[in-house]
Image 1: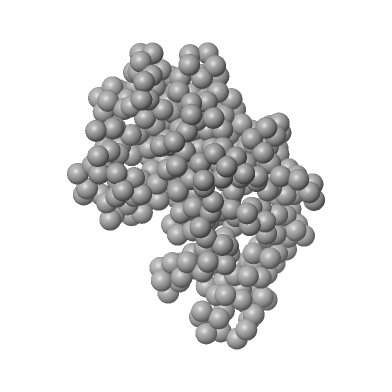
Image 2: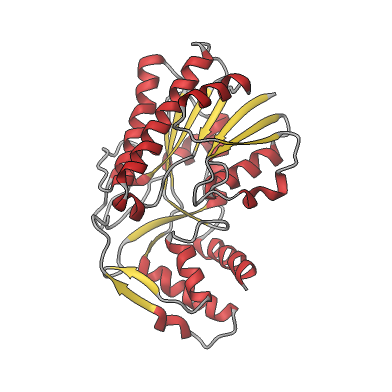
Length: 329
């Protein structure tokens, strides 16, 4: 039996990953640690909480002593690290929390791995899940590749860039077996409603204002969460140590377009007049240091591991909207 530690497993991406691994790999023991801050919700995991190959531990990853004990007591031989503070707006108002969790928390996990594995790295893996925001911003053309230099602009992306560097440093210095993936913006069921798509969906359903930063022309590459999980699964089981992979959805869409798509779809699904909710759109002062455009080149993971997203944005957003409507109405 493999004993796999998943950090942040009660969060948005983490809960999808935990459920996937518990259900698809009965020969794996899945140990989920999460500190259950505002974005962690054990209700996301109700369907698997009684499975024999699943265990939850409430834990702050910054507590090195506790983390080291978990590695030893649970005989952890692999880790998929997703626990992070992840909302850019929060990082602007409270950068210290992001540095603590994203940098020191990652360092705590790396050190615990190194100590508990005692240089016996056979069949061990430290998989660090990161973001495309570490690369900075793009102009009207071009894509982020795995060789794009880091150029973070927000406290959030700076903290994630630092954590990436620590992970690679443990590989270079101690030969700790690591792999990193950098993903584009995720969306789907169970996402905490401060993020753009669930915020817009919630507000449209409840006839609340739809706040759009600046001119609304900031572009992101949108990745349906289930497609991200399938990529993580492939990388975890097939990667070579030390690799980095970019994971993107091939869906470059501006915030204005997102709002328009959601208004049209939700108004139709709720039986409202066509585009009735357009009146809810409100432009607000732009976010400080707001990156203009993100877009990922996923050709490396496609060519090496055969991964491609299965969900178009239209398909993924329909599933997402339906989930929120069923939950909120």
